[in-house]
Image (cartoon, rainbow, N blue to C red; front, side, top):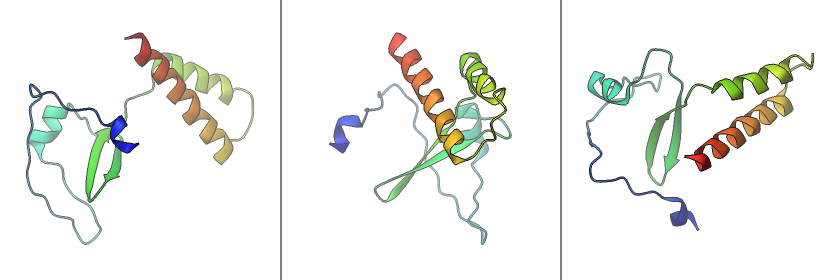
Length: 104
């Protein structure tokens, strides 16, 4: 069930809200206070997830050293990267992150 996966945000977490507008190119600017509070840097990759009628934006963390080494190992096989290889890399990274999360 969907609600089994929802984690409640502790009340001690700061919360901010504001209103922004989309440009004619469907772009928006994240206000500086939000960028600073989230510790975002230029070129940070962001994931946008639709939840109900809203959007949830989260930064995509940089690969860990272990993830990077596994990707490089695959890259050194001489295979060309297509959709299948990209999916494999995503699975490797997800498994490593799940393993690291269970350790903490």
